[in-house]
Length: 412
Image (cartoon, rainbow, N blue to C red; front, top):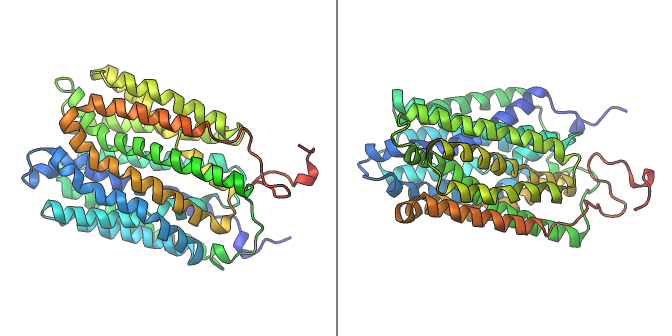
């Protein structure tokens, strides 16, 4: 039987561009944090910590914009929204490069955050739809996003050193625009918006879904706080703890990029396990390791700190795929963008506080207190994950993705 146009398997070129888009999403959001010292100097601001709060608008809109982005993805079309993403990110980054003071930069970064909010509720559901191994698909997608984090560290470091901080925005902007043109040419048109498709729902029971959504939201908030604290603060943490050891910004950028590259591959391993191991036990085990690693890093210096940074970024990145995996497993594709958007609005909206608090906390109390607070946050994530159900149980009579119909399996 020939599949309907709405169910034709996604071309590899489109899947590749969707993964590149995830890299772009995270790369662009961290250019400011990586170049903040150079920008502060150019704007005549004495301390980087005083400039850091001006980036909070990007992360606030990154979260708050997820709700309308997810709704538009389901009701208007995911392909159209991804085109808005590529061209919007490029335009906003070019505007950031043209700014002349902190408030202009804050406005440009806020616009950048609004366009960045499109990817997670739109791009990921578009990528995983009809995937035979959603865990692995999410794992590779997470790897792509975190390689964008690594690329931001190394590319921004080199561009700041050799061409200035404005080039650190211009060069990626041109990349985003080029990807937008390629996506417009290669991505197949959607015959209809996801919400209009006539497919059967794949969700848990109402009570179980409410519990799952609560856990997803709580864990997403705490995990996003850790992600934002680490990815926005690691550059300055390395700069401080490597004083007298390594001080060249390009070399520090390379070291930081290596941390992110190593940590990123954890998502592929986790993605493989998600398709085989119950989510609760796998997720709880990973977040449990975060607590002692952050606590040990609080007092570490030099290369000891660097080794611990690699370790805690492995488990920070390794925790990322779980909420997307739960959405794929329990939520019908027709409404995945909206459910994801609701979850991300709360999670990213609250976690944007990390960007606003980072500079003032480090200035007032130092990185030691920040890392101890991150250990406490990881403990809260662990407690939330313990509330997950013991087994991944679908609604009676409804199949989960990649599971055979219930009638073909032994009764529970």
